[in-house]
Image (cartoon, rainbow, N blue to C red; front, side, top):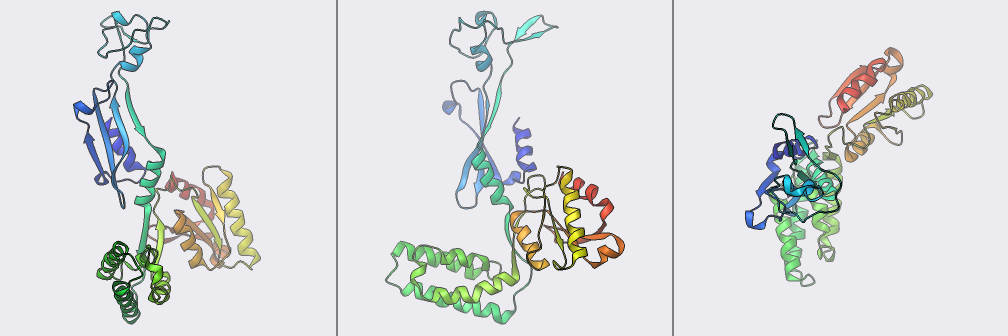
Length: 320
């Protein structure tokens, strides 16, 4: 059971190395449990917290609700049940004995599971190396901000220390850490520093150009499987073809598909990356000529030309 549950967590995107298995000491076991494992997930900000318990409840549950308890050879201590009319057993034809099955209870909280999946899936990926001179400007603005924080008497000491610690960590890991600047400026007390506005003004345009936010959900978990775009929203042929593809993909009921033409293709890709859509389909002028579309995969950003006639089966296999 333990191995099965660990495999299940891996199947939804939570790697095994992020989970610590805690073998609950005998003295701490519930009265019905012979052995219990707690699965502890290493949350990025919370540290290890329990996400699931796996308890061997022995024959306590079925034995408690069964009649003829005295003759069943129960291993668990149960309260007498004089009202039951059913013998909750399996009859073994070889031994000619009634056996009360053990119950193994995996118990996982939906909220904690959801947070673990999102924690693993969320990523801020650098897709373009910032120009050295622009990166230097951000680094200078960050240092000026931190110096101002260090001199400020408006901020409580513990808040000032937290800002400085986080800021120094960001400074040590530039440019990869640039997306964390917004979180730094959101820390309590940071809004008291006027130079924070300059830092945001220097950093945000470069972050927008150099990074993308991507939710790397497993395809079978993604709420939207496919997004379809026309290369130009004011071209009737492209729009009609794109809408037709969306209807075709959606009609099978297996792939929730959306249509979007409210921006440039690059911005539409980024929008779908942020919500975890695994595939984007772009209808362009080549589509009108040869019946193929561009399919872009979320994680690798690689693109492939696929015939429209084969698109349904191509995507269905990948999002299953």
